[in-house]
Image 1 (cartoon, rainbow, N blue to C red):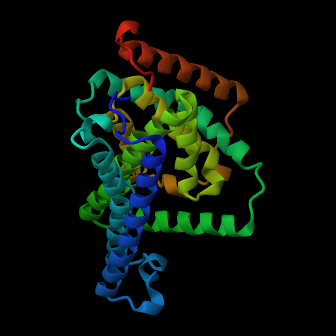
Image 2 (image 1 turned 45 degrees about the vertical axis):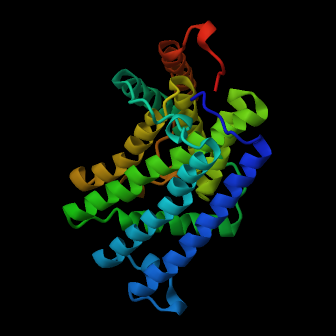
Image 3 (image 1 turned 90 degrees about the vertical axis):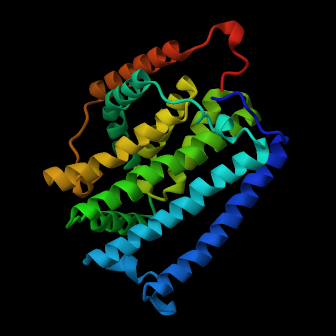
Length: 303
């Protein structure tokens, strides 16, 4: 991670982060209400456009709502916090000041590919968790909304999906969870592994999709380690974008509906394959680290 740290102590930085997030979410609520009313939805049914995605107009309203949500929940808070706590070094603090190396992008893609069977195996472990009815209902509603958004009757809808499901979340979630939260967690615990996994837990919990908690946790940890190893936030941003773009591209160009493949219907991953996947991911991860590690006399901090 970048060497720039907050000019405030860790408690003050935490207060700034919470304050900015609360203020930004409040502003989001006001703007969302105004946007919904301006789009023709009355006060008694402000979520109407989320419940019926049969028509392109409703799908596009939902996409704009998701765009606003990511801007005010992730991107704007992360940038504002970075500016406040570092003054003129926000880009360096967020590790966005250097372009990504193509070799790191390729290795990052390889890292996720070899880790995929292990991540997929975690769906089986996730299924062992006792989930309440409201958790299952929320999961079902989210899945139905995603399936509705993946209906793309035009190339314009495809481009909107790439923007609001891949590009904006890839940037925003990485800015907040890896660029700010993971970095600040390192200040608290002084252990990079704790920072990576704690940020990944928060990342997965934020999605409120409990049947996929473990897989998303492992994905978040993978992105966190890519950031830790490369010290460049562009790498997890790009990998996050690719991960989110795959189902959109597969649906639009190949008519393969990955969103319709529930974890229960996915093929079982043999344990030996999952273990091999984990070992390969560790090996690729260590190689990425070795390719980006500075000489020991130049290291001022691990994360």
